[in-house]
Image 1 (cartoon, rainbow, N blue to C red):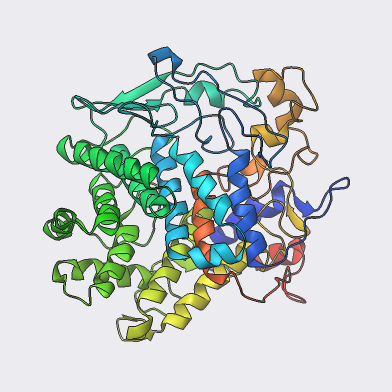
Image 2: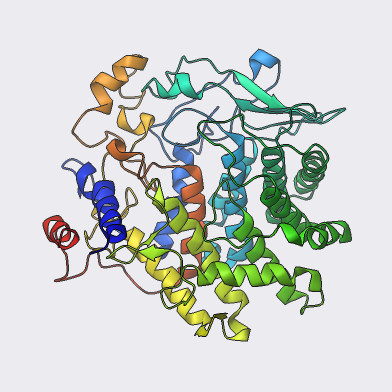
Length: 516
């Protein structure tokens, strides 16, 4: 067995088996899986457990309460609302923008499937709540949860600087007393990635709401234009959310991503010209993430090129690069770069691998649909059909939902076997409605973080495990990508049967296989 395969085995083993992935704990009501519609509903429900601010009367995740009601007050802006980034109590606009864009993209591309799952209203609500992370509808002020944006005469998009202090505590968001300090981008201290990603989020949300709420959507589009112009005029790489979210791919991918969404939203020639003039930035990639948007822009523009019946020849490179992205992932491709684990899961890297699986799967299904009339893509001498791409994408969704060697679902609340120790402060400590006394910063670690028992609250939809967060932590961008990954399969009559009957059905068998 090669060293690469051994590492893949170890990653899956440590990510799942060693950290509390088990039968539904005693005292919990089994949340039965009913197929892909159930999965997309739970993936969307996850966002209600991530909400910050004043919760609405229709809040479905009842173990959560109001929190962070004074965000922004230190700089006299109202930054209340939005989502907490992951299992912590921090709000980062850059990955949050990506999450909102992915949610909008799922609804734009698969609206009928979302509606068939009875999730249209819930998904719109999730997008609208996330939008409050960086845009306030009063005056000319935008904010990204803990980052304010003044649009005139200059734009400052603020970012939170309290990540370190927050991560030193394990307390419910309703109890948190860590500093809620801000940082921001300005013309003299730019952050193109952050501003451009926010522009993409607002442009994609505009498409979602333009037929539902005309005034609201028009406001979104106006702010998106302003953010894009700021990002393009004041170019400079964003590093203020390091060490948590550092820019490794540069800002060109975010500018292409934003311009692609603005063209899709407006069909204005200036955005098409921007994309044509800067097609040299397009780079062939084998991943799609909060940092690296190239593949997302390429797949989006490949569809634009298809709809324009190839009249926009300046977009041809994006189509070629989108094909290359698919070829880097497909098992039969002669130019394959990303391998799979023995059980069949794409393995991009050791840390938080599921985020790359979910986002890549989303794009695979989209490009399969775009290239279906052409018969798929060609990877060197190998022809890969659209149906083959779609089937491989489905296999990744199924793996996450339980069709894997361990026979467990990676999604909390889905199926009868799923992680019960989600790495999430609010979920791992009894609700403030059950335990009204304050849980202190250190007290949460000593009493709740290291507790061997299941979390007292099931964070339905979370894809994660508490003790092994480096491999798998719940984040908004994992769930947002998974919404788009599972959406094309809603309507399938398949009911997932957890595990492979007679094949690696126990953790010991899986461990033996990986050590063979």
